[in-house]
Image (cartoon, rainbow over all chains, first blue to last red; front, side, top):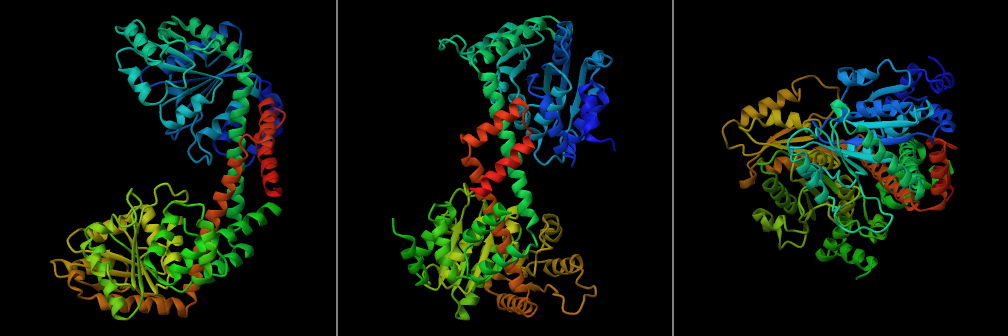
Length: 318
Length: 318
């Protein structure tokens, strides 16, 4: 097993294999993960992350690929993280099926990785930010996080990005579906893809109405733009990038970019701390202290709350 | 609001209203619960608890009522806790429909209570032992815990008793259903109810086979008895009580009764301790320490694991 320091060094030098292996550590919640995260930390905090979500069939994969092309034209190093919580496959099995992604397969400035998180204790919401940190340290200036489904956890992951793009397509009653899935609230930029089809304008109007974009807003508030695209032909994709850059500038002006990142970091720290405490309590099974407390509770000499207090006090001294 | 000390005193004196109000505290995870548990503790550890579980239609409610009658004939004070995790109702709404239970409604030596646990943070597995403690302190010598369904949490609750009774009925393919639900493993005593129906002997034989009761066991091992009953007519119910008492004697001889109770107490303490730690972490939201840690992680000055360690260390000093 190659050591973590070497892996991190190689990842920073842009070696795809090292990046892939570090993300595998994340997927597997490997014991070396802690060391890897500590080694990566100094090189993180630079990437701009964009979440993409939407119902199946709206063209998420095609749009992601088109966005990669657009950012490459701007000379940026790009990372793609495709997240599928329901898939048992990982490490590219999923993306192997995605013809359009293969356009970028030989580009050394593009890192593409799918991630499954079965067995990851903290689940997707825990694993995704760690994988982003790997891509961030590998020098990706933009990272696109594409969620395969629109379940609760996928929406959470997409919402964890700096900017969240919600994709729709005409003729799917999609606005209503999106509203039901609760993804309208998380969209910073909306894309109506397959805009060459009938009903694209109707979908955009419906969306405009549902978002209340016609209503007055406070000065300085962000007004989510609706961009029409035909991602398969690259049409409108530069306008999406423009909308993303505008949102990013808005976030930075308001200090909101840093605030969002601090909020996400706080949530991540909390989740890890809780898992650690749970593990510590688990380690006490068979421990003499817990056994004595349990005996006293069973005998009625102590109540379970009092016992829990003593257990926690013991933990926190430890 | 009456004070907890008075409620506990009245419950100990066998006042049904006080018992009911204490169990309501448990259901609602009320702030006074901690004080109530501390006040009750010295009067607990005496009751013998019997869990009853089985598929809908096997006659759990009728069997419970018949067991109450049998224990009353022995002069015992009896408690009944009917647990329905899916019900939004509580405090008797459920039992109000149960005609047979009303046989005991006017008996001052019988305490009957249904319990819903919606909104209880720790869920059913947390609330049930606390409710049992109330009935225990109220002087119930035997407490029957009847679970309404056979879901995972109901089975867990039934298995938390000193002795667990699994009920079946003929002609329901019930043995196989029970095996699927994983309740064969938890049965200390098996009851084939509605034994006047066709197929009762076949069900008993099938059960005998599935439990491997024909196979050799080590000397001193418990061999779960299979008792046939017609609970609606009270037939076989004294034999069930006899089987329960035998199992209890076996548990006591082997020191297993105390061991089971210590194990249950340990699990309860763990669950409460974890909830307390979770609450402490939650209290840190908006706290300066977490905010500083989050900022350092967002900037890449610290990794999230290191931050979590600092958070935990801060908690445990606090």
